[in-house]
Image (cartoon, rainbow over all chains, first blue to last red; front, side, top):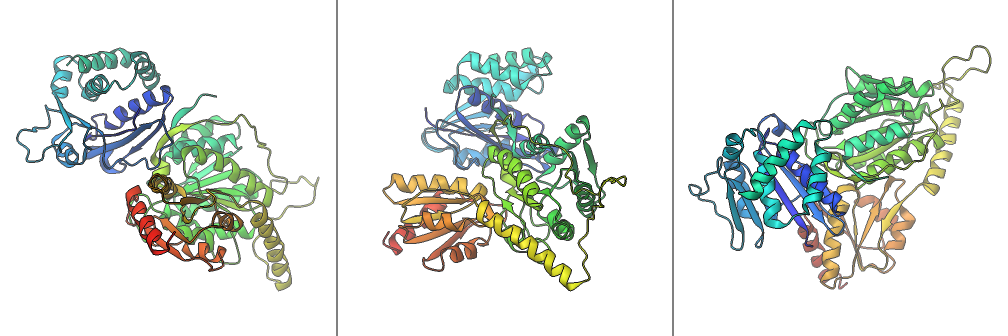
Length: 180
Length: 352
């Protein structure tokens, strides 16, 4: 496996850090080296927010991802800020409900595959408000073969521990993303 | 035990509790707040556990003085500006020979600086943590696992040599999550025998004091303390390093992670580079850096500061090797390619 250098980005409150944590937990259960590093400070009060996750077979140097090979951008400003730094051969997942890529002058570099998922709208339509982040993860996991379904399930159990009612809803959101 | 994901700050707090820490005194400041939050949640649940959010950093460090003086294992934590406020109290703790652990999750300075990571408190920690003739053993973790291991070690050194011990980490290590496990080792949480906690006329008085108006007595105290510092210097210095490299990169903490990536990239390109990573900053690992530089043509020091470790490297090498510096400031974490570029420049310059 290559090293996944992942950046998740969006507004504070969209579950950007949680999405990153779920990816890190999946990596850990898959016996990989993992690190997770949040942008910290005022972000969690509603500003823009991002999170670096590295999943690798080898020990991790810097946990700060400046040139991701996987990007999840969940709003316009995050798309504008990060789409240009995604490495060639990388994949970018954009919440097209909140980021209008066609209207933006910023485009992905050559060799970057862009997947547009109207995750926020899908979440609203399916009574899963607040789970657009997990819908995006579902799409990412499918397009990258990130990990086997049983490992993803186990990781989801772990991160929803103590809030079991959220497990089924999150799994439903993952499935919507996978099937989009 | 299975590994679990934890933030560096939380892992440090959990490790302290497992090392027998009963009392924590703190005051909020980013980026170390998870230590305070974790202690507020967990310490009151253990027997004899006390958590106090003090009125200020100065209040917190003086509560630490009182607590350590009564013989109880205790800790405080803060970030750079808050550590400056604690400096007076740390000098008193050193002057009264009180074991305790002080964690500095560094952010940029001077002044309020930034909340982003920095390593600009190296001089403060290793040279002048307070007024007077004193040293503070300073440990420098570079991973969440080392936040755990070095917190445990800090309590051991504090007790063994009766001294405050500092953990010098930074915002990156405090905020990041990595897998960790905790050893099953149980450490004593019995109160220290020197504590002034009531003798009931059954033993001689224990006196906690840093004031000695008689010059002979003060000089004797200082000499005795420095004999202990000498033992720390001989026994406790630690480093992790490659041997035989021509260009040696010296870096600690978060920067050492980036330097490791840079050195690995350089090696993949056929450059004989190596990493020297101090795990203790005082005592500086002098013997180890000599060992790491046996074949070296030059040393590159890399830090998130203006080069505060450079002098220690030069002195440890007795000024026999050229020492250069590359660093970032202002809250930037260097990236591996920046350090790699400097390694390549030095390879050409020193014919390594």
